[in-house]
Length: 69
Image (tube, rainbow, N blue to C red):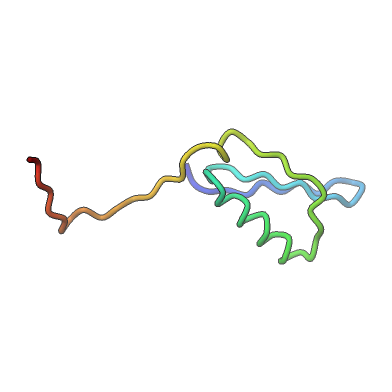
């Protein structure tokens, strides 16, 4: 799944943002970035199940040496 930011502008001027496909604490970095970009104040944060999932890292093993002893 691709990383996405879902943004809603509410009639009262509030902005809601949801991260999708961003696991672990990385989602908080996107929140901080949005806060800086639009000069906004974060008033409430709700963590989703994805926050508690492990971040995935792809490792290039093309030239790796693997030994099974």
